[in-house]
Image (cartoon, rainbow, N blue to C red; front, side):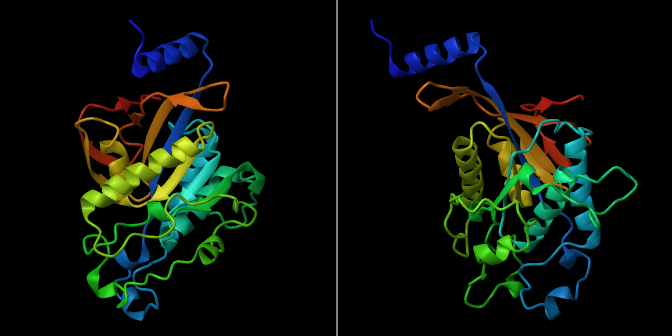
Length: 284
């Protein structure tokens, strides 16, 4: 009896595993830092874009510290980050900027310094792109109804978003997975499907690179529940993150086969509150 397509793929996967010819791909999905409107309750009433708050200074410092920990190996993220994809919301753009400063710093010897002020980076170390598919859920659960633009035009423009990011890091050749943000009134279930689809598509698009995706709390939670069976995230701290990994097996024709994503969480480090047992608990 001949092999089915599934049997053939499994045999190919096993043969490549025996040859140890594979790349361990890592994807980190991070929530933005502390948003200003949660601390200055009058900010939105004075803002021209009340739906799009910036970070507080503490939020910027928290994001910079997270990037620095990634770079120095003082966290479970002890692998290089090759690409950063970021939601178009300002708080995420500013978070990505600070994390990149932490990741790419070249004069960061004094670890008592807690902000990116005065830090020089090597922009060649990383590539950054805006991804609309990582944006906030567009519904009244995630965006305060009184702050929504009356015409539901949130006014995101890729070039203006890119202007917030560190000079020299933008990869202008990247085509976003989603060409526009969702329509207002997006259902939570649809947003979760969107986040998971974008994560998978970006990983498949760059199978030989490790990715950092800067998004929103629901995106982080979705990245865990989609790939860890019977696991539920019920809170993500500012700059909290999930860590996904999978084995990627290249073929001679430049295609590849990939194993399933595993979800890694180190309790007390990732900033996630969750229940369930289908995660890899890191101890280092």
